[in-house]
Length: 97
Ligand SMILES: [Zn+2]
Image (cartoon, rainbow, N blue to C red):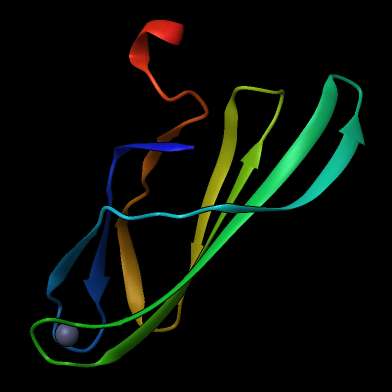
């Protein structure tokens, strides 16, 4: 999974914008659906806000369905607000589209 556009989140404590470029997704589940397999990926991140040092933990979930297409991206966290979801690609290079 490649990050085409990073996620942008906002620290709830100080409203500082944080760009998340490193998203390291692990496959956690697959579901058999009528168009093939649906694959669920997850990444859990913990870091501190570089402005106010608040501890931030967030969970990024991605569902790929049908194969090769990102169906849904969900960021869950009590510590940040999501400004922009990341844009992800199942392919490593643009020319494979
Ligand atoms: Zn902050």
